[in-house]
Image (tube, rainbow, N blue to C red; front, side, top):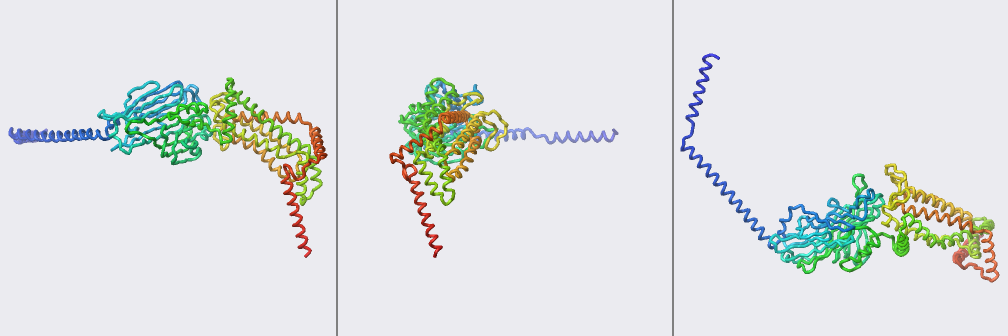
Amino acid sequence: MDKNTITGFVLIALVIILFSWWSQPSQEEIDAYRHQLDSIALVEAAKQEMENEAITQKRLAEMALAADSTGAFFANRNSSGEVVTLQNSLVAIDINSRGALPSRAVIKSYHKFDNDSVPVELFDAKDAEMAITITGRNEDIVTRDLTFDIVSQSDSSAILRLANANGQGYVDFAYSLRSDAYMLDLNISSHGMESFFSPKTTSLDFEWSMRARQQEKGYDFENRYASLTYKETAGSTDYLSETSEEEKDVAERLDWVAFKNQFFSCVAIADGDWTASHLKSVPFVKSEELSYLKGYEAKTQTAFDASGAKPTRLQFYFGPNDFHLLQAHNDLSLSGKNLELEELVYLGWPLFRWINRWIILNLFDWLRGFGLHMGLVLLLLTLIMKVLVYPTTRKSFLSSARMRVLKPKIDEINAKFPNKEDALRKQQEVMNLYNQYGANPMRGCLPMLIQMPIWIALFNFVPNAIQLRGVKFLWADDLSAYDEVVNWGVDLPLIGDHLSLFCLLFCISNVFNTIISMRQQQNAAMSTEQEQSMKMMRWMMYIMPFTFFFIFNNYPSGLNYYYFLSGLITIIMMWMLRRATDDNKLLAELERRYQERKAKGELPSSKGVFGSMTSMANRLQELQKLQEEQRRARQQK
């Protein structure tokens, strides 16, 4: 660095030092600046004080408003709530103080279909929500937005209170769980709250939504019996569609609304009836990720006394669809009326329900009373039902046997009238032969028609018998669900993802029964025209067992087991009756009766069972002759 550069840097440093000294403020200027800063701070402090005063005045105004508004409960909005659990030996019900309504229900007395150590959980806070709304003078009380205080609690009772901020009034939700029962009682009452509610407040609104969980092994089959069901106070039960979305406004007063699965139900019961109900059911699409059947919604109302003189009484049933158990819970009704909760167990249309209610159910209970395994109970039930219908089965067989031994005589009539134009006369001869020998083709059909109601009644009874749930028998893990000996893991149309062995055995027994029946008809006495009409019937009868396989493959193994036993016993009965029947003796007996009636002049002509048909045939034949004569007359002209 040279001399000139050093001289330049020194001069620059001197300039900066002199400028800093010259521009430094005086003491008076420093004092004035400090005074200015103090003034700004005073202004800011005054402004903050004014804002604080405004907040204070606003809070005082809100507190004043609370004396005449449901805004008194705003302080209860921020808490997440605590859980109160009411339980007995059968059920455990959680009630969250946030909302003060049931948030979870567990059935201790039953277990999950795929895990014997885990009890059935009907719903939790993720699946279901309940809310009660009470109209206020200035604002409504909506329980889902408010947290109640837990006043008292035990295993069987609890009181949750929504108190006014000034402590001058409150609303109580008092719960009581019945011992050794699935019924939960709720009393809603107000105290000192008359000025808080609108004079027009005479009811409260109840909203309930839930996703129905899959509780059984067979998703598709359980879905058929899952429905939103309700009971009209002055009528019977009804339900929304199980297969499609349905939304309905119900004007009639209701005793209860139930969110129903195949074997379990959640029921909301109103002592003062539900009114102005809006119900909705939406089926879900089957998914491996989500195991829910349907989405249920119910919006309804019931009476509420704002003065607190009379509490609003509600009840909840969280339990199994057991016919006798539901009947017993009818006696727990707070109103004393018959709730008819047993209607939640579907037993079929009126005729079939009557058979199930008074015959099959009593037999089933009687056999269970001996402590027998359910597989043996179904076997004995099948035997008893077969014994009861044996007289009609025997009549049906003997009718077919009479037709069989008369076949040579019918063949003679067919040979006597080979031409088509003689069909009416041939039919008349066949009918007269039937009358004279006491043979009636309809006698073979009527006994089967008598047995059909029992067959259909059991079709409705077995899938709804909760006593079969979880019962293992032979290779079946659960008699209330399908049994799978093969599972290919792919849900195929019609058949599903498995092969049910009991269903296969049922269809095989049905094939053998069809073969036996068809052979009897082939050997029976029939005209040529009857033979032709029976060909199509035979094909339909042979196809039927294969149709049954695709229908029943997803049905409960207990039902297929019953039908298999029924078919097997029928085969044995037919074999025994065939062995006990001598065709020659039967024909000789028919001939003897024919001669006796002929000697006494008692042989029917155009009267009897087929009398009207024979008379009609005669009239048709006369009409045919008249038409033929008119045709010939026209030709001659």
